[in-house]
Amino acid sequence: MTNAVRTTTDRDAVLDVIAELYRAWADNDADALADLYLEDATSIVRGALNDSREQVRANMAQNFAGPLKGSRVVDEPAFVRFPAPDTAVAVGRAAIRFAGEEQVPADRWVIATWVLVRRDAGWRIAAYHNGPVA
Image (cartoon, rainbow, N blue to C red; front, side, top):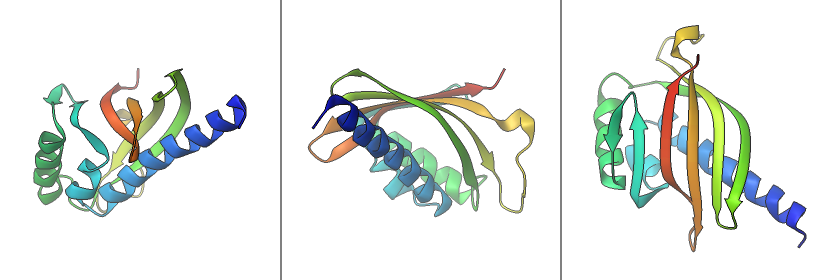
């Protein structure tokens, strides 16, 4: 397999993990969402640190039972890069669309950065961070 084909296949696999995460979000399924993270993953959202898969799971379960119930994420992937053979960095824009909303307010968009690593089970999220769009 050529490097270009491998990279395209890997890019698609990385974007599939992110899409799977957002499907779990739309289902308000904290378990399925957290299972896409490594055990020792980090996630920083709105300045709050979750430093393990279990913290991600607990935080999302609490939010899906409260303010994020019925919400979805609108995702616009920008690019995926591979700084090392089994490491990917994905960047894109995203925004939460709350239940009952048809459009996302402009001030809710963030730039999201994902770091994924390939393990025996496939690509998994090692780190996530987002910040407001400037």
